[in-house]
Length: 435
Ligand SMILES: C[S@@+](CC[C@H](N)C(=O)[O-])C[C@H]1O[C@@H](n2cnc3c(N)ncnc32)[C@H](O)[C@@H]1O
Image 1 (cartoon, rainbow, N blue to C red):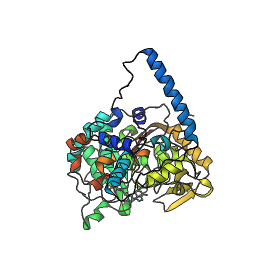
Image 2 (cartoon, protein in one colour):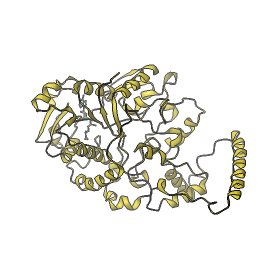
Image 3 (cartoon, rainbow, N blue to C red):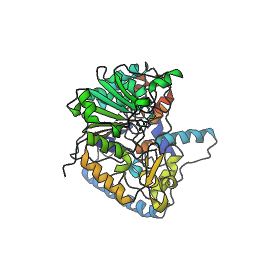
């Protein structure tokens, strides 16, 4: 699945005219990445083809040498004020949805045996069709600071696929995610841990309290890492821990949570906020796997690098994109957030040396059986989201250009704000290291 995600990225068009042509193409209801290209010389003889290619490669060589001394191309062509230029800017913006992928890329965690998930893009599409009417009945319509549409769908889809006997949630807020878990598996038990009981929010507005849920909340709150899970599993009659899914939306260091889950014997974990390097309020698995030996991983703090140029360009378009100044801390530390491991909503943080960050990734790889990031539900030209940078996210389930499909599924009915919370929700399967 990841291979198809990686291979379908496009190169940016060469100039404004090509960008405009690319945008016109966007109107077709077909993912750009799947269009087939026709070969112009298909009907010419072998000798003519050889001459054609010879000339082509010669010209290419000349161009490469000429480009060595060339200045970087300007990002925009024209004044930002006239109407024509504004539409050209939009074209650039649309074109920049997934280009630059080659330079920034999407880091990925390696699993022990390279195993991946069972579900396919088709399953996700079918799931979306089913989930939308469910989502429209949600009790908490405005879930600011909680999950939006993409992650609500992801949680519902994964849990429904896994059909656990028991679901554990850490971080409930007003109870929206508890409601999603309940819709996904109506008969399963839920354990929810959160310092403030969701019922407290009922006084001020909509909240969700589940009848078949054991709450470790309010005065009964216990942190996930301090629960005697063997005792709790016993009490709930759970002997097979592969039938348990743990969902973390508590903004704690994910390495800490993963080690706690591993110690308790849990195997299926979902992390809501799998923050990208340089962003977020807790150390995430994606940050840990951001290493130089991974495609799209490892960074350069060199101010005149291609990466610096591309980052500053993308920051103009995407709120959560970080430029090189934000990415790099003291001593050019780029890992985690400026060389820091953040924890507990960034109420605590600690600088770590690169060697420790590297060791963390080796440890993670030694316990990972599956690593799967939920793709965004739809491309930014459809959802109008302006936060996450698509160059650092997997290809969306509904790609830019599939406007008809987006509308057919009814996604156009949703308020655009529900698409603004995507942060690479993550499913991992873990087991103890054998080495
Ligand atoms: C982002 S909100 C959760 C949103 C919720 N899952 C939703 O979809 O609406 C984070 C929640 O984590 C809670 N929290 C803070 N520290 C926690 C901890 N140590 N364990 C569990 N929850 C914690 C906060 O009180 C807050 O309710």
